[in-house]
Length: 484
Image (cartoon, rainbow, N blue to C red):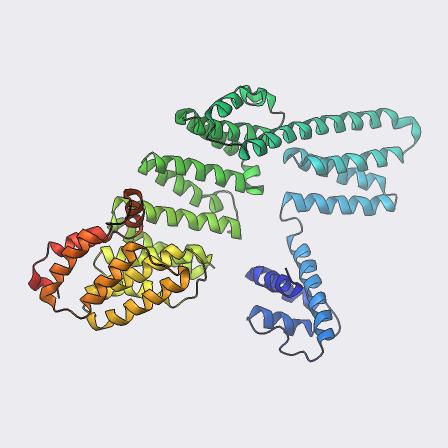
């Protein structure tokens, strides 16, 4: 990655609060602040060298700006997580030790050890123990031998827990690189000593991996009830220590998503919705800001819920959910892959509700935005839905141009068209030049030919995103005189 790309990504990664802090932080800086012009230029998407004639000046300014942003972020995040708090405590201890202020050192060490133990920051706990030994060894010799022995004993306990955690982590890595379809091997793993008894896990972190491993192994060996039980026990275990969820919510979120996925697979709709709501409650319940990774998983729940209503053909509930999602889109920066999915699903839901003008607005957002290679399948379905919408709106004269645009899009993306795509384009092309009384005949021919060259699995996968067959059936059931 180039330095230019790195700086651009760093600037664009800043949240509003971080930009405000950077502005305050730079007020403390003296001298020429030409770097702020560069920051504003990158932030607004302008060329980075817009105000620079000398390339060497630009390089120096870019280097300074990158360092300044990181310095500002370090100050901004100080104490916001327990990990950063521990790191700052260690720096304070080092400063105090150099000044031979040993009593203050011991106070900081005691505080750091307590936090590190509570949150199982084993590597940093070893650092605090290291400084504790240095402080003890700096005191009068008559009082330090027993104290040093106690610190060394504690170091041994921490190293033992680290080794145990390493064993579980290695087990997870081995499992993830194994053939999960090898049932005999997976069943043999269930007899491993690390899996047989929870008491083998010497720390909370190791216990999480213990249940995670059980969930995977029971699931891949088709023992779904035991796999689900392991997930439920893991969630209960995590919820007993809310401070850990607040400090590091990713593992808890992943576990809830796994449980939700299992419920969706088993068609347990109500239970899956309960899991969805539980995920959405996390930021408020645990006092978390919607950082990027939390926002992504938060957004994912809405996407999953829309897909669930789509599968159930519950268009009314899907329509109600759209207004809530629109508020989320208006107030947050949504990742492109989810934004594209939302626009498509909005268009599809409006279409199913007979709200064709609203459907067109959503699909136009996809067609008029450069989503690159994101979800090429949805971008393709959006263009066919676009054709269907215009037919329903009676915009027949537009179909010919829309068909040509769709064909060009598909050929540019992958060169060749799938058989069902060729049939659809041929159908809409004929619609664009036919009289209304011929429509029913054309729909009948499309019904017979659409999936003639596709397997049942291919047909099912296509209809999951855009149910052409239901639309065709609905149109065939209409009298010729009721088209428009």
